[in-house]
Image (tube, rainbow, N blue to C red; front, top):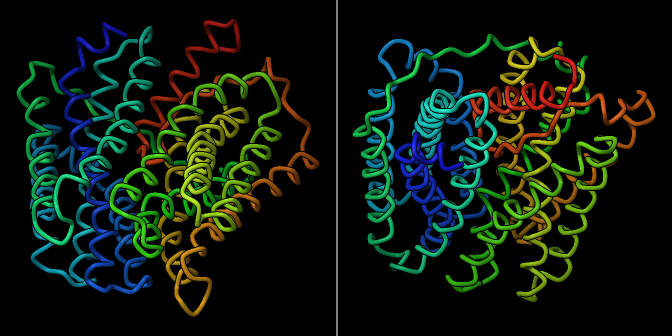
Length: 420
């Protein structure tokens, strides 16, 4: 772990600042949108736009890096993010915000691709798993820390937007000023979606449904808090609890997943997240119960991403894992685009109101649990000793990080005496 920190501390510090800025702007826009009188449907388009840009960036960033290199891509995209963040309070209308979110989503995707390939280059076979774990902890910790900054300034003013912009502006300095060499860049050509669906129906369906849950969690929870009249401190705590749950539950579930039928675990975890949604929908008026709901949903949703990737890998050869990673990320991205749009409609005053957030997430999680149970009747379980290792990956990860996680799983399998 110390070896990873010594070789990649600048990159990890930059990612931490980026994630603080990203987590802050997402929550801040949800609160500011309510102040500006935006409808829930308008905010849903704003939040969905981020994932449109993110999906586009994940497809285009590799080509950009090959043409001009990591340093230029990293610096240019981070500069655009900083500029858009400081323009949000200048142009306070849903169309401008939606366009800004497309740009920011595109840029963050490119920055993640760049950072993850740098991280992969800085790690060795012996510590690649530790490097990925640190990366995930930094990502999640950055979003949690961002929620505290929501209380620093008035969301109706400029101060908090300026703070987010400044954090992004200085985030790339540690990396660009470090002496670490820029890595060669390469990603595998994605496997067709039809091939992946045939290999792992649960992996594909689960990733699509999970994309909707995660994007609603990432984009609409602050909107929910503002709608129901939570204070800034309560909104900050509510949003942070999703990611605290993710951080605390990810590793225990990973340990369990290597020792049982992963489909059964997917069913149980998804159902548990669905129960959390019911708690939020029925008892969300009590702050304690709202936080319990957030912890359950966040704690179940984020590990499910890694779990579905590991389940899919169980039916792939080592050579095909990298090719499948791009398709899985793309499927998740499609679900992420739809998530806030449907959630925003359900949260409208003429439909279900704010509780529509929990109704949407719960419906998808219970649907995933039911489908996992169905798949258990269609295919014999792979013995746990013949499955790969589940490596934690954050749902905002790009294809590069998923490929990195798969390399870790392959190496772990070889160390355990599994098939090479």
